[in-house]
Image (cartoon, rainbow, N blue to C red; front, side):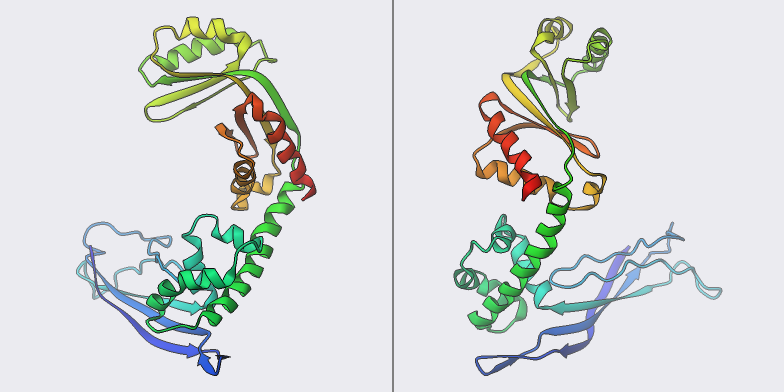
Length: 304
């Protein structure tokens, strides 16, 4: 399968704004068109919307389905697709903002100098627009974006965080990191069978491609090391504490909640050693010396 003859057609400029006596368009629409070859040659999707678009600095065109082959057509049919594009100040500047870590947060918190930022991103904006842009125009666009960021991202996140449920703190934990082996799961099963009636103790595990982590209460240390004595221990970290947070069910549909929490931890110099999560609950593991500060940050989220 291949795509040929990609093109932009039906470009329409709209909107008008004067800055320093120069008129700028504030919006533009266009049609992206391309031909898809060999789509029908072997197997094609007869339902759903398998044709999607990846765009930069534009609204994303709707995904499309694949039309059936007509009565007089065969598998050599070339499918022409069309996607509607919409370029405006928000899509253009958002593209320049999103690929820079912490920049969107700094804008929403109004802690960044917009004039300095405009000078920094001006070459990138001019490259995308293919013309010179005045710094004043960039500053005005950044002001609009910062107001939108503050409302859209922060407001939705804070609404969820105000409804945080129970916060549970556990101390005296140990983190074991083992190399993944054929016998590791069997060791875990035997260990879990032995401790299944000890509900007061802490146990959690996570498995990656090459290593697996198990975090337990210190009281289970001896049993743990007996069951796993033949496994390859990569690292063992003790003097740890965990903080478990119950989140509202709507957290799974709001992007940025974990980032918002972890960012505040980072700003306070708190190193997060492990993160364990389920759909509506997550647990962070930190060194004992940071647990009080981490708990205070999470508790204060409700009053932001």
